[in-house]
Length: 576
Image 1 (tube, rainbow, N blue to C red):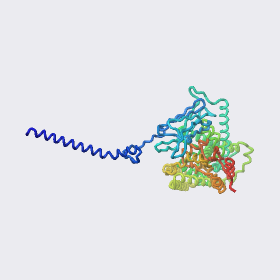
Image 2 (image 1 turned 60 degrees about the vertical axis):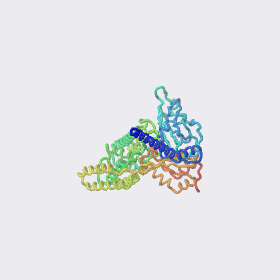
Image 3 (image 1 turned 30 degrees about the vertical axis):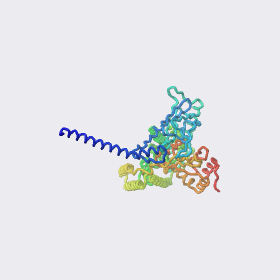
Image 4 (image 1 turned 120 degrees about the vertical axis):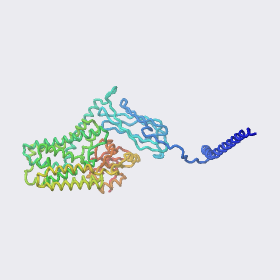
C-alpha cells in the first residue's frame, strides 16, 4: 500500500489543479459576458450604449499634403489641376481659388459638380471624395513663365477641418517639347505692359519727391544748388542723380535676392525691421544736429559736391521708402512679379523720376537763373529744416513702439541722449570729432544689437484672407485696407479720409465693413494678399461690392474719392 500512496497523491493534486483552472475560466466568462452582451446589443440596435472605449486607438489625422495630394501641369494652353484624396477626407467645391500673377490671365475654371453634403462647418455644400480634376484655361500670357496660386480647403469625416491651403506653381512654357505660348500679339502686349510699367515708375518717382518723407533732403539739396557756382551745378546734379539711381538699384537687388530665397517681400520691407527703424532714427537725429550747427556730419552739409552729393541722393532714397506715390504700386508690383532685369529697370525708372526735377533745374540755365540769390537766409533755412528731421525721429520712435513696445522706445531715446551728449562735448572742438563719430558708431551698433525684438502679439498675424472671402461670399460689402504704421501715405489717408465722420457715416449707412491688414511687421499672409492684386507694398484699398468684382481705390484718398468710387461700384447711397 505504501507504493500506492505517491500515485494517489499525484492524482489528487492534478484533480485540484483542473478544478482551479475550470473555476478561473468560468470567472473570466462571467466578467466578459456583460460587456459582450452590451456590445452585441448596441450593434443589434437594442438601445444599449457601449460608451467610449479607453483602450481604443485615438484617430491620427493625416498631414494636409498626404490627405490631399496636389498636382498641376500646363497642357496646350490649359492648366490641369488634380487632387488625389485619401479615404475619409473630402474637398469643398466652393473653396477652390485660382490666382495668376501679373504675367498671365486665366479663364473660367471648369469645375465638375460635387457630391451634396450637409457639413457641420459650412452647412449645405458640394464636396469631392477620392479625386477631383479642374481644368483652367490660360487666356493671356505676357512672358514665357508665370505663376499661379491654387487655393483649396478640405475636412475629414472624423471631424477635423483643415485651414485653407494654397500652393504656388510656376509654369515655364519654353522647354523640351514645349513651344512658347506667346504669339506676336502676346509679345507685343508684353512689351506694351513693360513700357507702361516703366512710364508709371518714372511718373511715380516724380510724384514721390513731393511726399513728406523726401522733403527735408530735397530742400537741403535746393539750398546747395543756390550756393553752387553755375559751372559746378551739373556736378551737383550728376552726383545726386547717381546716388539716387544707384541706391534704387541696390534696393532692387536686395528685393530680387530675397525673392529668389522664397521670402515674401515688398516696397518698404526694411522698415519692418526694428534694427533698421532705430538706426534710421539715430541717423536722422545726427543730421538734425548737423543742420543746427552742433556738429559737422561728413557728406551732409549745405555745400555738397562730388561724393557728398552722391550721399545726399542715397539718403533721399532711404527716407523715401516709407512713402508710396500714385503709379508706384502698380509699377513695383509688375517689377517684382517679373524677372530680375525687369525689376531693376523699374527701380532705375523710379530713381530717374525722383532725380529728374533737380537735374533739370541744375542744367537748364533759364531755370537756374530764376533761383534766389545766396544770402544769410540760407543759414536760417538750414536750421529750420532741422526740425522736420526731428519730427521724423519722433515718428520713427513711434513706429518702433508699435513694433517692439515701450522698452524699445526707451532704448532709442537713451541712445539719442548719448549722441546729443557726445555732440555737446565736441561743440567748437574739431579735434574731438573723431571721438564723437567713433562713439556714435558704437552707440548705433549697441542699440541695434540690444534692441528688444517685436513682442509675440506683433509677430502673430491677425489677418485672414479666407475670412474676408467668406464675408464677400455671403454678400457682405467689404472695404479692405492694407496699411502700416511706417507708411506715411497710409497714415495721411487714415487721418484725412478714412477716420472722418463723413466717411464713417457713409460706410455705416451702407453696411460696409472695413477690415484692416496691418503690415507694420512682416506678415506673409498680407504680402501674399497684396500680390494677388499685383501690388508689392502699402497702401492698398480694395472694395468688394456684393456680387461683383473687387474695385481698387487710388493710393491717395479724399472723402469724395472714397464715396464716389464705392457709389459707382455698388450703387451705395450717401447719407444725407
